[in-house]
Every structure is written in structure tokens, then in C-alpha cells.
Length: 223
Image (tube, rainbow, N blue to C red):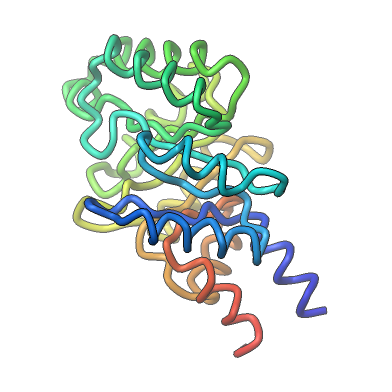
């Protein structure tokens, strides 16, 4: 039973390495862990996509990368150049930050255009849109979710992990209620234990972004 639970939970984890100045050895370890545990993806900076694709060749783990991360500046032309690069290097999932300032200024059409342009450029690959929930109240989170659905992305993601706080259970619940049962919800930021992950899954997340994937899976045995 424990092995089945491990496999199921591992299949929901984007094992993440996005801290500045990470070494090649750290990326190698990231991919070795992903191979061992069967994580859904590794989530890495664009310039490490090619390296990780090579490390993970022949496994079920795919490579996810980030666009306009972590600030969400909304430079569409630059973002599209980055998307083209990472697709050419083998990325299969893209976590983009929505245009934070435009959203704050209620320029919702610009936010929508920025997301939709990346969805189109991704050509069927999974696009997760980071809304940075720590900045918004529940009503604003709902508006962001509506925009993301309209833009045809596949996931709403809570956080970059580089702002004042990450995922909160209450906000994951708001997102799930807003997007419905069939849409993707990724909780990320501050999820460091098996209990943390379970709380997010129970709240409605069907993907977990974390740098603590191994600790989470090992926590199943501890429980």
C-alpha cells in the first residue's frame, strides 16, 4: 500500500530547482532523484532544460521550465523568444508568471493577451500560470482564474516561491472552486512535508511544486 501511495504522490510532484547559482551537480542530483522516485517533472531555469532533458532520457519524468519568472513583467516579445528556446530544447511544460503589474492595474485584456500568446506558442504543451496569490484577495484570485481559463492555459499555479509567502490551503480552495473540477491547480511555495502536500491535495491541488519531493515521499514511510 505504501508503494502505491508513493507512486501516486510522486506523480503529482514537480521537483523544483530554481534557486540562483545552482551548480551542475545540483541539477544532476535533481534528475537522479526524479528518476528514482518517478516525479512528474523537474522544474528548472530555461538554461538548464537541455541538460535535464538529456539526464532524464528514457524516463517518464518530463522537464518543466519557467517563463517571465519570478517577477511577471509581461514583456510578450521576450517571453515568446524564451518559449521558442525552451521548446526547441525539449521542455514539455511551462510555468509562466502572469503580468503582475497589469493585473494590479486591472488591465485584464493585457494579462489575457500575454497568457494566450504563450499558450499558442507552446503548441499543446502544458502551460501553468502563476498568479502569486500572496498579492491578492479572494475576489482578485477568482478574476485571475477566469482570465487563465479564457486564455486556454491548463493550470493555475499559486506562487513562485520567491515572494512573501507561498501556497495557502484557503487560497487553493478558492482556486479550485473558481476553475471547477477538471482544470489543473498547482500548489507551490512552502510545501516541505508529506502532511503539507496532503493538505494541498485535499484542498484541490492536483500538482505540487516543491524542492522537497524526496522528503515528502520519504515522509509516507514515517507516517
